[in-house]
Image (cartoon, rainbow, N blue to C red):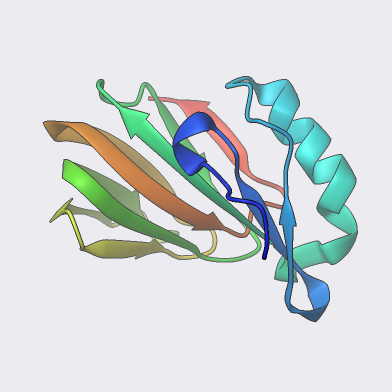
Length: 135
């Protein structure tokens, strides 16, 4: 039997080539963690996926975009309004609650507003080349 992975404590996994599931070092909450993740698993290219879970009490102050693949955003607690800015500039907002999900397509800028929080969200992300900008 495998060890228990406690996502609520910042223990995430990488889904890699060959259908591998690899536990990751505990998430530190800073951008350096993501840089180390990309360095360690970047060889999986666009097929690698980061599976993470985060709880938010405040609206995001940034936008992010994943240029090389889609991201599944699954709400498991609370309600969150996800705003997407498509490549053509179209803006769409979808509010999801526990058990509902949205997909951020490749190249789509996205941000989140806490509607009924705290919110807890699971992300399955094609993160190679992720970009951020201020909101």
